[in-house]
Length: 498
Ligand code: NAP
Image (cartoon, rainbow, N blue to C red; front, side, top):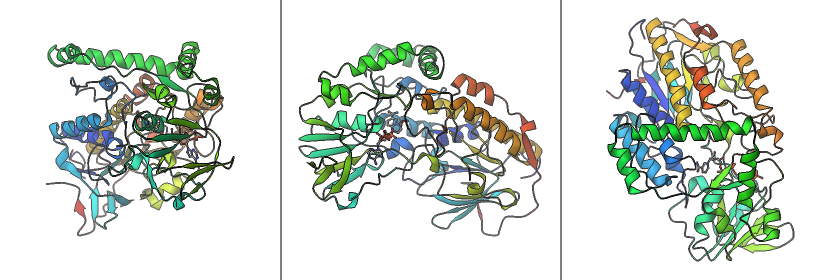
């Protein structure tokens, strides 16, 4: 890329909410020389992968959109997964991003060549791009439990994030392992039709009972036809959510704790309620929200199994009290391997340094967006992005605004940029120190928020704070890497679709 040429080529990894957004913003800037590499067979990321029964968003639908593309057609306060996926597919089409997506293309390796990134797919295709953007999301590698005998189960086993449409559950005995957001939605739905449902709980969760109201027709009409109405509503919901989430790590939590307790009080049987009562503070694990879980867990065909699992046998699960729970279907709602991020892809940056070396002690980064040693590399919703219940769509918009300014700089000056190592470490230590004082640690629980060293790998910053931090890049925190004159290998394809 020549100085001032203003036409960098860009490779984006992942065609979920963040990847589509990056595509929209690149096109807005007149950059059309880009490809979004997607390992799956469709757009939508987490909403393509998570198609389990009952999958829905627990962030209000009106906020779970790009701020520039409202959707007046949501029928419910919390939209179903399929509706969310359709919104993002439709938006990708409308903004001309879909033709830039290369499906079934998983990037296996990314190597900095001195003036561009060389990408290799798992199929062995080679591409090159001036700039590389990871938009892979934080929750996409399913975590499978290490339970003795799991492979010996004679019925059907399915992970929540890899649901198959041929898994029949109606009139059958279903076991669900896990009590997180995924399990809760699955239990609420399958318990309506399964002959018997056993929920295997290792740790009780705080579950906030929130009704999922059907939205009145007049509201949809107003959002569609009254200028500015959808936008005003978006900002109102955003403010409400910001207030609720900031209470988690600051200020008076009394109302928050009371709401969690009031939901638990919906459980009538004292023994069931006792077993469902967490011994840690609400908000320590990400709060589960559900309109119908409390009703579901009290159905006569549903049993909460709180005795630990000992092993799985051909016929079902055996708990440590020696009891066999016979099952036809076993659902593993056991979450995600969060610390994988964009791996197993390998990365080699400036001077041959690898991502595994840079991340040997955890995912070192600069403001969650860039990584020392990795020139012209950016992450959307990367490690140490805000946690809590902040909408990942809003985080993606803030990150993307920052990245676009960096791309302008790269194009104007004809350089590669990467964050300074010492500054990255300094800022990350500040984030980790703040995170260590939050309910995610002080609340007394373990969750996917915590890294292997027990310190959260999420940032307690509010969205407003993140927006402030990322409003304008401070290029004094970056080093400029002069572009080498090395040429791309003959035969390496540009990422351009043209
Ligand atoms: P999760 O919150 O990590 O929950 C995993 C569950 O599996 C936990 O209850 C865990 O127990 C249990 N588990 C894991 N390994 C186990 C084992 N070996 N034996 C017994 N139990 C085991 O995963 P998730 O429910 O998929 O949710 C992950 C995140 O995805 C959420 O926090 C949220 O950010 C997102 N999500 C969002 C929505 C939405 O509506 N927007 C819906 C679903 C998911 P322990 O607690 O004891 O570890």
